[in-house]
Length: 68
Image 1: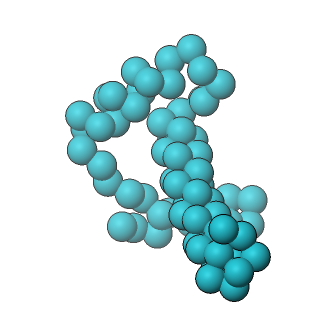
Image 2 (image 1 turned 120 degrees about the vertical axis):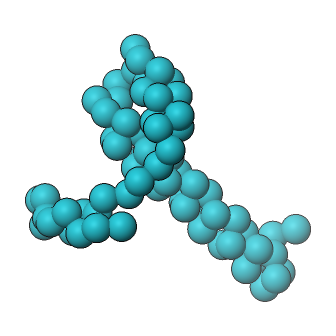
């Protein structure tokens, strides 16, 4: 991964993915509100990470006896 600089106060890196995945993602976003494959992949990563964090919160609440 290479550092790519900043944009709106955020640091960015370059991430390489197989061209086949890029092409599939490009087809997937056709007709959606996503402006680029990068925007789509960032969305998917954020969703995935939030889902995992949410599961961890549920596990902790369950361990504390707040939920079944």
